[in-house]
Amino acid sequence: MVEKLIEIVAGTLRVPPSTLTPETGPGDLHAWDSLAQINIVSEIEAEFGVSIPIEQVAEIRHIRDFLPYLETMS
Amino acid sequence: MSFMKCALLSNVNVESIARQIERHEVHIAQGFGAWTQELADPASATLSIRPSSIFLVIDGTELLRGQNGLQPMLAELDEQLAWIERAAELSPGIKFFVSTIDVPARTLRAVKEERLERRLEEHWQKGIAGASASRANVYVFDLKQLVEEFGRSRFYSNKRWYLGGLRFSTSGERLIAGELERILDAQMVARKKCLLLDLDNTLWGGVIGEDGIDGIQLSETGAGARYRDFQLRIRELGQMGVILGIVSKNNEADALEVFETHEHMVLKKDDFAAMKINWSPKAENIAALAQDLDLGTDSIVFIDDNPLEREAVKNALPEVTVPDFPADTCELSSFLERVYKECFFSIESTEEDRKRTKTYLANAKRAAERTTASSIDEFLDGLRTRIFLTRVRDGDFGRAAQLTQKTNQFNLTTRRYTEQELRVLQSTPGASVYIASVADKYGDNGKVVVGILRQEAPDTVELDTFLMSCRVLGRFIEDQILDHLVAELRHDGFSKLRVRFKPTRKNAPARAFVERLQGGQLVSSDTESGEQTWEFDISKASPITKAAHAELLTKQELLAEVAS
Image (cartoon, rainbow over all chains, first blue to last red):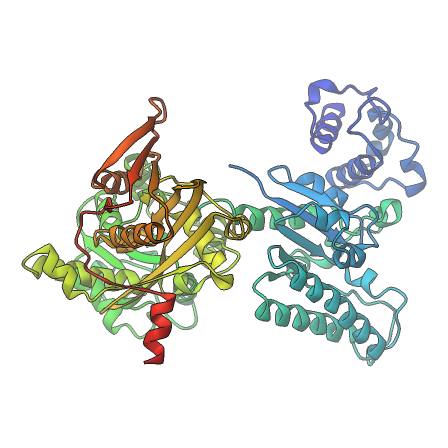
């Protein structure tokens, strides 16, 4: 699951997956700006068929923060 | 491949779309509400970077925000259209791709109420279609079509809109970016020229040699309609200027009978520039056909239902494009649409393109005549060729650029130019861009020659570019044109002409031309690239040795002829 997340984030940011860990977040990479944050949320929602409430998008500070939403997947 | 510099303007946030386009340089405006100001102000960030193209991707909902009532909304659309037209008028060197608009229902309403959205979309569409028809530099970017094909509910995203002013979903953005890239690529990449088709189980269902003319599947409705619809699409490609040909293993008489007598055949014999219907290996036929039509095999796309035939052609001629045939023949039409987009897509079809298959047919007739004429000189004189040579003017920059992009065989330097670069060059002191069209007793070949002269020193002019479409090769037209230019240069007081030749894999005809020029001094020669520069003293003699076979008219002479 984490690998898949990293793959999606890497694809959106156009960086090699090897540069990312579950701890990576918006503060760590120049490419991960607010626009990239929205794109990452959209891609993860589409890929896993989940919905991340708008209020919580800003709360995501690390790749691992997406994991709880994936647990809601059916 | 080099890249295009373009600007993407919108009334919503399109930064994320711009980021996806990696092959080209895409500029976006700061602040996305300001697209009309960006267009109106020649000093704006968008116009001052001098993009070759400007894309206007316009969101219908935002465009009409806060407007109410049909008349005020139509007036608002007209006002925006007027801004776009004005910008297009002020910057003729920039191509404007203006999107159609999609207007989702704005309010909840009862079934009986009128759907104003359709009228607004149509009003806008008519406005930009009108601008596109009347202005060479305005094109329609069909955003509405993308929305419809993909489905509106998936094309937009509320969450992205509320989070960042991003109207489209990531899928929607990908579709828009893909379309933009395709349009930009089409201006850079040489598109394919020729589509070769198999017959059995490709243009019709079944095998003519076995099933007979009454047994093959080809009909207006029902199962045979898959092939008829496929043929309709192929004919459209032909009308857009793609050269069509047949390569089939069959008895020629059986196959021709279908073309001549089957009532549901859409494609006729005349739609094809060449047919190879025999039992030879297809790769041999394709190579021979390419030679007959003077085409490079790398400009050919080959469609065949038989995977073994496809494999054999791919192995023997790896430069030929051989798409996989759809497993489900219900998909034939959409398959051809994909082939069009991938191989033949062009932002416009010029007059020359539309006439191309006809031209190739006429060429075949000329070739037949060549074999009967007793000498080549007699043959050439009998063609009654007329050359019309002028400096490139407004309407011709597009065609001239297209020729520099596509011509490979008779091309001395193979320098590719965009329309905008040629415009700049033409207005540069000491530089001159010429174009010539060629007609003969069989018809008009259209504009097929481009020459660019640049002054290098007070007495010296360099031939920066000299190219000619291969359809008129072998008639010494190039010799006659250079001879004329030399005479003009001498008249203008120049005494030296420099001719550059840069060898490529394909331009042997250009080498032959340079080799038959006389009196040249080799002034530089690069051992690595093989590039040579020859200098000719033109103060007394011309480097041309070949006798003229055509009548060469310049603009002044044409005017005099019309007057008399």
